[in-house]
Image (tube, rainbow, N blue to C red; front, side, top):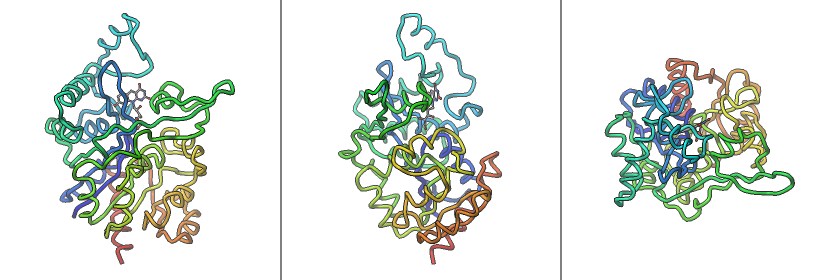
Length: 318
Ligand code: FO1
């Protein structure tokens, strides 16, 4: 079975770990969000690709959900001693090595997709990890401070400001001219099942779908598309998805996110059992909906979620 997953960072990576357990023989292609990418200290950092790679490769800091296990911060401290920031972004020494290798390869002319493949040769994530695009896309968030509107990089909004101010707009800068990375459209067209994990629907899955050709390929794919709600009990399971959902005029409810994707895009939608009451509204919109436990408390619980998603895909295949 060929499964394609459109994944963001922590939620996507943890879901993939469960999916691998649920479908050990499947050929899984992950299309990773690169809108969160940031250039720091002359290095290209790809948080979501790295989070998937480290999580599936056994190198992730489990408590944080991002960055490396057994990490130290000597380089960051030395940079700070020179007065060189930003101090608000936690790049560890081990993690730095990944960004150095990536930047060196990009400088030598390799596209991000080839660089990601090379990095995965070390981590052996057990999935084919593709960036959504080899072209630069950077998500910016419009905010208002003291009556003045300005745009900040997504990481500044997320990590420095902790989404403490309202997002007025979310713009994947560069997406409109970006091309899907090699293999992305082919993987979608050849998939037996396409899954949207409980990743952020705006800045993760939404950014991937903003690359011209990707949304169209998902809509045109013969495979059933099933999503898992990142909202449980009217609040994001993790992170601050409510802030960016509000920016696109979507309520933070399991049903509203399903309707935001729409029946054109998703055939099936899983909500948590606490949101069972939302199923009727989702079904009325033409999307098959089931209520199952959606908390990724451990790998077994996550694998059970993945099995439910695959079962719903089978059901809607018709
Ligand atoms: N998240 C934080 O909350 N604080 C950090 O300092 C931070 C650093 C960081 C470094 C590398 C990396 O791959 C991820 C990092 N993240 C950090 C996570 C990241 O900001 C976001 O969670 C994702 O971009 C959203 O998917």
